[in-house]
Amino acid sequence: MTAATASWPLDWRTRLRVRSQSLFARFVARHADPAARRFHAFAVGLPRSGTHSLAAMFDARFRAAHEPALVDTLAHTMSWNRGERTPASMGAVLRWRDRRLGLELEAAHYLHHLTPLLVEEFPAARFVLTLRDPLGWIESEINQNVRSADYPFWRALEEQRYGRYGSGFPAPERDLAAAGCPYKIGSYLCYWRDHIEGVIQTVPADRLMVLRTDQIGERVPDLARFLDVDEGMIDRARSKSGVGGDRPIELRRHLTTDYLLGEVERHCSALAREWFPEQG
Image 1 (spheres, rainbow, N blue to C red):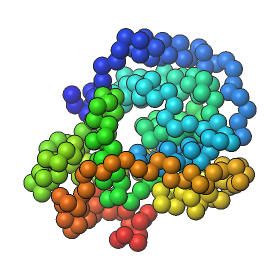
Image 2 (cartoon, helix red, strand yellow):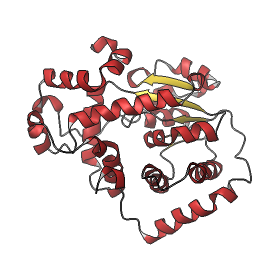
Image 3 (cartoon, rainbow, N blue to C red):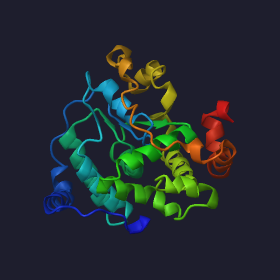
Protein backbone atom coordinates (compact mmCIF):
# COMPACT_ATOMS: atom_id res chain seq x y z
CA MET A 1 0.00 0.00 0.00
CA THR A 2 1.39 3.40 -0.96
CA ALA A 3 0.35 6.78 0.36
CA ALA A 4 -1.41 7.54 -2.92
CA THR A 5 -3.55 4.39 -2.81
CA ALA A 6 -3.96 3.99 0.96
CA SER A 7 -7.34 2.58 1.94
CA TRP A 8 -8.81 -0.05 4.21
CA PRO A 9 -11.16 -2.97 3.43
CA LEU A 10 -14.71 -1.72 3.91
CA ASP A 11 -17.40 -4.19 4.90
CA TRP A 12 -20.19 -4.56 2.38
CA ARG A 13 -22.67 -2.44 4.35
CA THR A 14 -20.25 0.48 4.53
CA ARG A 15 -19.36 0.11 0.84
CA LEU A 16 -23.05 0.16 -0.10
CA ARG A 17 -23.79 3.13 2.16
CA VAL A 18 -20.88 5.21 0.91
CA ARG A 19 -21.64 4.31 -2.70
CA SER A 20 -25.29 5.32 -2.26
CA GLN A 21 -24.30 8.60 -0.65
CA SER A 22 -21.99 9.37 -3.56
CA LEU A 23 -24.64 8.55 -6.16
CA PHE A 24 -27.62 10.31 -4.64
CA ALA A 25 -26.09 13.19 -2.68
CA ARG A 26 -26.37 15.66 -5.55
CA PHE A 27 -30.15 15.14 -5.70
CA VAL A 28 -30.84 14.97 -1.96
CA ALA A 29 -28.65 17.98 -1.20
CA ARG A 30 -30.95 20.26 -3.18
CA HIS A 31 -33.76 19.87 -0.71
CA ALA A 32 -34.33 21.15 2.82
CA ASP A 33 -31.97 23.58 4.46
CA PRO A 34 -30.54 22.57 7.83
CA ALA A 35 -32.20 23.98 10.93
CA ALA A 36 -31.47 27.65 11.57
CA ARG A 37 -27.90 28.11 12.77
CA ARG A 38 -26.60 30.80 15.06
CA PHE A 39 -23.24 30.37 13.36
CA HIS A 40 -21.55 27.87 11.06
CA ALA A 41 -17.95 26.82 11.56
CA PHE A 42 -15.48 24.05 10.87
CA ALA A 43 -12.53 23.33 13.19
CA VAL A 44 -9.84 22.03 10.85
CA GLY A 45 -6.78 21.98 13.09
CA LEU A 46 -3.99 19.47 13.31
CA PRO A 47 -4.71 16.11 14.92
CA ARG A 48 -3.93 16.26 18.65
CA SER A 49 -4.26 20.05 18.66
CA GLY A 50 -7.59 20.74 20.35
CA THR A 51 -10.39 19.92 17.90
CA HIS A 52 -11.91 17.59 20.50
CA SER A 53 -11.75 20.34 23.11
CA LEU A 54 -13.40 22.89 20.81
CA ALA A 55 -16.35 20.59 20.18
CA ALA A 56 -16.68 19.93 23.93
CA MET A 57 -16.68 23.65 24.72
CA PHE A 58 -19.65 24.20 22.42
CA ASP A 59 -21.73 21.02 22.60
CA ALA A 60 -23.76 21.95 25.71
CA ARG A 61 -25.29 25.09 24.15
CA PHE A 62 -24.82 24.56 20.42
CA ARG A 63 -25.09 21.79 17.86
CA ALA A 64 -21.44 20.77 17.89
CA ALA A 65 -19.66 17.46 17.32
CA HIS A 66 -16.19 16.02 17.10
CA GLU A 67 -15.59 13.67 14.14
CA PRO A 68 -19.27 12.90 13.42
CA ALA A 69 -20.18 10.12 10.95
CA LEU A 70 -16.54 9.09 11.24
CA VAL A 71 -16.20 5.99 9.08
CA ASP A 72 -18.32 7.25 6.20
CA THR A 73 -16.60 10.64 6.21
CA LEU A 74 -13.15 9.04 6.22
CA ALA A 75 -14.12 6.79 3.32
CA HIS A 76 -15.27 9.80 1.27
CA THR A 77 -12.24 11.89 2.26
CA MET A 78 -9.70 9.22 1.39
CA SER A 79 -11.42 8.57 -1.92
CA TRP A 80 -11.11 12.30 -2.64
CA ASN A 81 -7.43 12.19 -1.70
CA ARG A 82 -6.90 9.32 -4.13
CA GLY A 83 -8.37 11.40 -6.97
CA GLU A 84 -11.48 9.25 -7.35
CA ARG A 85 -14.00 12.11 -6.94
CA THR A 86 -14.66 15.22 -8.97
CA PRO A 87 -15.07 18.53 -7.11
CA ALA A 88 -18.75 18.52 -8.10
CA SER A 89 -19.45 15.04 -6.76
CA MET A 90 -17.51 15.58 -3.54
CA GLY A 91 -19.13 18.97 -3.04
CA ALA A 92 -22.54 17.31 -3.32
CA VAL A 93 -21.58 14.81 -0.61
CA LEU A 94 -20.48 17.65 1.66
CA ARG A 95 -23.76 19.52 1.14
CA TRP A 96 -25.76 16.34 1.77
CA ARG A 97 -23.95 15.47 5.01
CA ASP A 98 -24.22 19.08 6.17
CA ARG A 99 -27.99 18.91 5.86
CA ARG A 100 -28.06 15.53 7.52
CA LEU A 101 -25.89 16.59 10.48
CA GLY A 102 -27.23 20.13 10.84
CA LEU A 103 -24.24 21.21 12.93
CA GLU A 104 -23.17 24.67 13.93
CA LEU A 105 -19.63 23.50 14.68
CA GLU A 106 -17.99 20.44 13.18
CA ALA A 107 -14.50 19.67 14.48
CA ALA A 108 -12.27 17.11 12.78
CA HIS A 109 -8.63 17.30 11.77
CA TYR A 110 -9.17 15.36 8.53
CA LEU A 111 -11.51 18.06 7.22
CA HIS A 112 -8.42 20.03 6.24
CA HIS A 113 -8.18 17.76 3.18
CA LEU A 114 -11.55 19.15 2.12
CA THR A 115 -11.00 22.78 3.06
CA PRO A 116 -10.99 24.14 -0.54
CA LEU A 117 -14.38 22.52 -1.13
CA LEU A 118 -15.79 23.60 2.25
CA VAL A 119 -14.78 27.21 1.57
CA GLU A 120 -16.62 27.14 -1.76
CA GLU A 121 -19.68 25.11 -0.76
CA PHE A 122 -20.36 27.04 2.46
CA PRO A 123 -19.53 30.72 1.78
CA ALA A 124 -20.89 31.85 5.16
CA ALA A 125 -18.89 29.30 7.17
CA ARG A 126 -15.91 30.23 9.31
CA PHE A 127 -12.86 28.13 10.06
CA VAL A 128 -10.78 27.59 13.18
CA LEU A 129 -7.26 26.24 12.73
CA THR A 130 -5.77 24.91 15.94
CA LEU A 131 -2.04 24.34 15.96
CA ARG A 132 0.47 23.06 18.46
CA ASP A 133 4.23 23.50 18.83
CA PRO A 134 5.91 21.00 16.49
CA LEU A 135 7.86 18.88 18.97
CA GLY A 136 5.07 18.66 21.54
CA TRP A 137 2.69 17.81 18.73
CA ILE A 138 4.93 15.09 17.27
CA GLU A 139 5.21 13.22 20.57
CA SER A 140 1.45 13.36 21.11
CA GLU A 141 0.71 12.30 17.53
CA ILE A 142 3.20 9.41 17.53
CA ASN A 143 1.61 8.01 20.66
CA GLN A 144 -1.85 8.48 19.20
CA ASN A 145 -0.71 6.54 16.12
CA VAL A 146 0.51 3.75 18.40
CA ARG A 147 -2.78 3.68 20.30
CA SER A 148 -4.82 3.55 17.07
CA ALA A 149 -2.74 0.78 15.48
CA ASP A 150 -5.63 -1.71 15.66
CA TYR A 151 -8.00 0.53 13.70
CA PRO A 152 -7.41 0.00 9.97
CA PHE A 153 -9.18 3.19 8.91
CA TRP A 154 -6.87 5.32 11.07
CA ARG A 155 -3.80 3.46 9.84
CA ALA A 156 -4.84 4.01 6.22
CA LEU A 157 -5.40 7.73 6.81
CA GLU A 158 -2.03 8.00 8.56
CA GLU A 159 -0.38 6.38 5.55
CA GLN A 160 -1.98 9.01 3.31
CA ARG A 161 -0.80 11.73 5.69
CA TYR A 162 2.77 10.67 6.35
CA GLY A 163 3.66 8.01 3.80
CA ARG A 164 3.76 10.53 0.98
CA TYR A 165 6.94 12.02 2.44
CA GLY A 166 8.98 8.88 1.88
CA SER A 167 9.73 5.68 3.76
CA GLY A 168 12.69 4.59 5.79
CA PHE A 169 14.29 6.12 8.86
CA PRO A 170 17.58 8.05 8.91
CA ALA A 171 20.28 6.43 11.02
CA PRO A 172 19.78 8.66 14.13
CA GLU A 173 16.10 7.59 14.28
CA ARG A 174 16.52 3.84 14.13
CA ASP A 175 16.15 3.48 17.88
CA LEU A 176 12.92 5.51 17.68
CA ALA A 177 11.66 3.21 14.92
CA ALA A 178 12.51 0.15 17.02
CA ALA A 179 10.43 1.63 19.86
CA GLY A 180 7.38 1.56 17.59
CA CYS A 181 7.29 4.96 15.92
CA PRO A 182 5.63 4.38 12.53
CA TYR A 183 7.07 7.34 10.59
CA LYS A 184 10.25 9.39 10.60
CA ILE A 185 10.41 12.79 12.27
CA GLY A 186 10.75 14.57 8.92
CA SER A 187 7.45 13.12 7.70
CA TYR A 188 5.61 14.41 10.76
CA LEU A 189 7.16 17.86 10.42
CA CYS A 190 6.40 18.10 6.70
CA TYR A 191 2.78 17.21 7.40
CA TRP A 192 2.65 19.76 10.26
CA ARG A 193 3.87 22.43 7.84
CA ASP A 194 1.66 21.42 4.92
CA HIS A 195 -1.51 21.11 7.00
CA ILE A 196 -1.08 24.58 8.48
CA GLU A 197 0.03 26.25 5.24
CA GLY A 198 -2.74 24.56 3.26
CA VAL A 199 -5.49 25.91 5.50
CA ILE A 200 -4.00 29.40 5.79
CA GLN A 201 -3.52 29.69 2.04
CA THR A 202 -6.99 28.33 1.23
CA VAL A 203 -9.32 30.05 3.69
CA PRO A 204 -9.88 33.81 3.23
CA ALA A 205 -8.28 35.69 6.10
CA ASP A 206 -11.57 37.19 7.28
CA ARG A 207 -13.07 33.70 7.64
CA LEU A 208 -10.15 32.11 9.51
CA MET A 209 -9.04 32.15 13.14
CA VAL A 210 -5.68 30.57 13.98
CA LEU A 211 -5.61 29.37 17.56
CA ARG A 212 -2.68 27.88 19.44
CA THR A 213 -3.58 24.81 21.47
CA ASP A 214 -2.07 26.23 24.65
CA GLN A 215 -4.20 29.38 24.30
CA ILE A 216 -7.63 27.88 23.64
CA GLY A 217 -8.97 28.61 27.12
CA GLU A 218 -7.62 32.14 27.41
CA ARG A 219 -8.79 33.15 23.95
CA VAL A 220 -12.46 32.31 24.47
CA PRO A 221 -13.41 36.03 24.16
CA ASP A 222 -11.67 36.23 20.76
CA LEU A 223 -13.32 33.00 19.66
CA ALA A 224 -16.74 34.28 20.69
CA ARG A 225 -16.25 37.51 18.72
CA PHE A 226 -15.02 35.60 15.69
CA LEU A 227 -18.11 33.37 15.66
CA ASP A 228 -20.45 36.16 16.82
CA VAL A 229 -21.79 34.26 19.83
CA ASP A 230 -22.20 35.05 23.51
CA GLU A 231 -18.96 34.34 25.33
CA GLY A 232 -20.89 32.98 28.30
CA MET A 233 -22.29 30.15 26.17
CA ILE A 234 -18.82 28.70 25.57
CA ASP A 235 -17.68 26.31 28.31
CA ARG A 236 -14.12 27.40 29.02
CA ALA A 237 -13.77 24.64 31.65
CA ARG A 238 -13.76 22.04 28.88
CA SER A 239 -10.88 23.60 26.96
CA LYS A 240 -8.63 20.63 27.76
CA SER A 241 -11.15 17.85 27.12
CA GLY A 242 -8.98 16.08 24.55
CA VAL A 243 -5.87 15.90 26.74
CA GLY A 244 -4.67 12.48 27.86
CA GLY A 245 -3.67 9.03 26.72
CA ASP A 246 -0.68 6.84 27.45
CA ARG A 247 2.70 7.95 26.11
CA PRO A 248 4.91 4.89 25.79
CA ILE A 249 7.21 6.73 23.37
CA GLU A 250 9.14 9.75 24.63
CA LEU A 251 11.06 11.56 21.90
CA ARG A 252 13.96 12.66 24.06
CA ARG A 253 14.65 9.13 25.22
CA HIS A 254 15.57 8.28 21.64
CA LEU A 255 16.76 11.55 20.07
CA THR A 256 18.78 14.51 21.27
CA THR A 257 17.23 17.94 21.55
CA ASP A 258 19.77 19.26 19.04
CA TYR A 259 18.72 16.66 16.48
CA LEU A 260 15.03 17.45 16.94
CA LEU A 261 15.57 21.19 16.68
CA GLY A 262 17.68 20.62 13.59
CA GLU A 263 14.81 18.73 11.96
CA VAL A 264 12.40 21.56 12.82
CA GLU A 265 14.80 24.04 11.26
CA ARG A 266 15.10 21.87 8.16
CA HIS A 267 11.42 21.23 7.54
CA CYS A 268 9.28 23.98 9.04
CA SER A 269 11.41 26.70 10.57
CA ALA A 270 9.48 29.67 9.16
CA LEU A 271 6.12 28.53 10.52
CA ALA A 272 7.60 27.44 13.84
CA ARG A 273 9.21 30.86 14.36
CA GLU A 274 6.03 32.68 13.30
CA TRP A 275 3.66 30.89 15.66
CA PHE A 276 5.99 29.78 18.47
CA PRO A 277 8.66 32.50 18.60
CA GLU A 278 9.35 31.84 22.29
CA GLN A 279 10.71 28.41 21.40
CA GLY A 280 13.10 29.73 18.75
